[in-house]
Amino acid sequence: MPNKITHGHRIGRVNTGTYTSWEAMKRRCSVGGQYYEKGISVCSRWLSFSSFLFDMGERPVGTTLDRINPLGNYEKTNCRWADPNTQARNRSDRKLIEYNGRAQLLTDWAKELNISFSCLYKRIYKLKWTIDKAFATDSRSKKDEIRESNT
Image: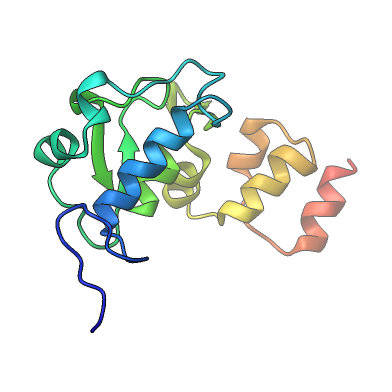
């Protein structure tokens, strides 16, 4: 007889995605976990899986648990189910780049300027171009970029 999955209860080795996310959240905030040293904790209500499930609902396919404020705690008002793109944009180590009076992520600037992310990244972080030069220079061959970086 195959293992069954019930709402949040492990039977054998099979877990629901929701239960797995709940366990991972608690582990990250426990002593020795990656968030413990940062002071990020789980609200007392969510130490119970049934309360977590009631507040968050079942985890939709293709999502994981995300903190809206990446420096905030795990609690109902600061958590959501998010896809990988949303989570990647919500990291605490993401840096906003200011240009023409606006600030946004490099990925957003790349789309707006129609220059590949990898080209902008290389110009700014590898070749040490200024933001103005990196954003204002049209995308050309790698030879042109290297030649310009040496001028």
